[in-house]
Length: 154
Ligand SMILES: CC(C)(COP(=O)(O)OP(=O)(O)OC[C@H]1O[C@@H](n2cnc3c(N)ncnc32)[C@H](O)[C@@H]1OP(=O)(O)O)[C@@H](O)C(=O)NCCC(=O)NCCS
Image 1 (spheres, rainbow, N blue to C red):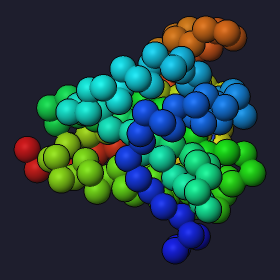
Image 2: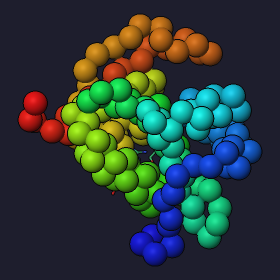
Image 3: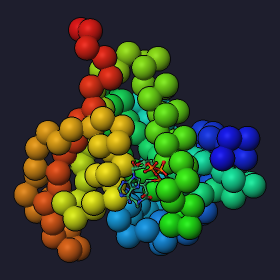
Image 4: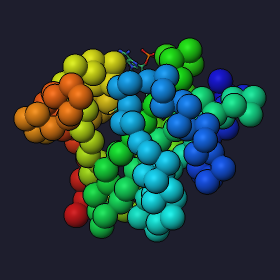
């Protein structure tokens, strides 16, 4: 993957491709065009990255930072490109950005049934921190919250 994958900032012109990508993955948060545009129009607190292979967007990640906390808002990799490290490349870039901004903790929510995503997050050291009953609609399901501590220092 080294040398053929490119991680870059998301651009407004990516949104069409992302809406198509989303249809390939029901586990990812399904966002509207407006949701992407809102995030991209507030680059101070939000950061969205895409992964490209041969000029094709094969995955993306979005997070939001408030003070020393960050929230992973959405992350997905096209099914045919999973388990080859695309998610890792995205996540490692996120962590570099967050450390530079002195972020201490990263939080996220995941559907209780989303075992692959939990495997991915645990791989990076996330630990379960709570449960939000019936957090998700369609179908209703609990969210599990996970936390990763990036820095011990206050
Ligand atoms: C979660 C997701 C982004 C992972 O992306 P990926 O590119 O396949 O991840 P990587 O190849 O970098 O995997 C890194 C490590 O995470 C863990 N991991 C990844 N997928 C896993 C799975 N299905 N089951 C268990 N562990 C998994 C493994 O430890 C893996 O290392 P390994 O392949 O050497 O065993 C991808 O499965 C996805 O798009 N899922 C659907 C969308 C989604 O659920 N997003 C999260 C919403 S909260």
